[in-house]
Length: 320
Length: 264
Image (tube, one colour):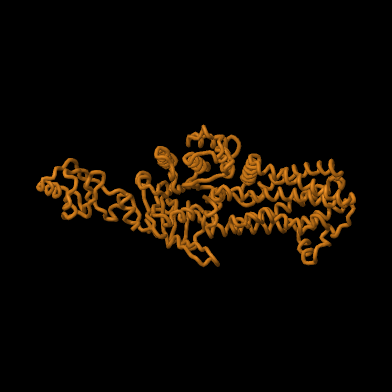
């Protein structure tokens, strides 16, 4: 699925018909098709989420875009450079954070960031300044002399984030950046990602299993399943594309009203924490009808809420 | 390509390996324990067998070569092994790092460490067995050490290539490969005592020539013409081949996904 962008120079990523198959086993006969003709364009300065179930091909796609894997077929241009032919030049301009980061266990936090800084051409005072600022930014000052092996999962994630910013990348890949983090740390990481785009204009491509994260951060979302992009758009566009309808949540007395699910325009009804959630085709039209019917049956209506379906429901629908 | 960036990348690897070495007690054993055990056991054996001074020097040269090559080669292999063990390989290869930076940076640390081993063994050999490493002169000693370092570099890079090609399964090769080279290169004997087929392989190894050149100064007739020059030429050839193999292995790992499998 290709989205037209006014100028090619405005694209951070232009991937067309990308295919990748992994071979394993005896004589490499066992084949696992990871990507089946994926096309994706990402505008400069955008945050795009790549969502999908486990094994959908998200990490494979990110790895190809980040030059860690070579595609079998297709054309991939990142920041105007070919990911295979110009890989060395491209690596200076991008970076990546993984969900389960790992670095040399005996190295201390500041040493890890400095090691990568040197690889990107930093030295002397410039290197020290960059290391200090990244350690401050990721709130790692109390841990700068702590060996990596002694850090908690959240702190390791912050080291990965600091390392990923050491070359001031134009494009950042975040593969499950908040995986395994405490909720408060995850909130801070998300705030930081949003700030990176806002203040530095970095293009960000992220994969996540947390729909709220994607909803909150991403300008656009691409849904990938079995190596294909099935849908793409803003969170709202996806919800409309999937035709999930709208949700009317009712707090009733008595709490259970079996005939509600059979009412005209009601697609399904579920009970959640004392609420009856009815998914309807069109809330504006169905709400008065339902309220009238409930009133006529003598059901007391204690509370009513109308909302769009969650992105998670879109995910579940697409993953079916 | 800027020279400044090239040197910085080499320095980054040098510093990283040096820090890792300094903080690992296992590395301490590599540096001291096994080399000392080696020279003491071989030296005492030569005394028990009542070898002549020249014969004892012959085997002690081999013992020292074994330790120097072993320590230096392992350090070069650590260029990849450290990242494989800590599952950080993909971060390393996501950065603008070339194999020249990896192998040169780790080789520098390897040379420093094996030079320390050499000084220690030379002192121990002199004190315990009257073996004098400087008897052939500074130039001969320098050539011999350079030969050991070059051999270690070639074997270490080849091990890096194998690990990148086959993953953790090739790790055992990192520990075993150098011993195979040393056995074939005539570590405790002239290669003329080897069967013809093995002697032919020995003649293809640079270390064979460096051992021969150095031992000639202890009264043993050289088996080759211009052994030091031949050793250097072979080292250059194998270094180029090993680097090409390492590069090909990384490209293959990017194609097969092994680079990701060996990471977190």
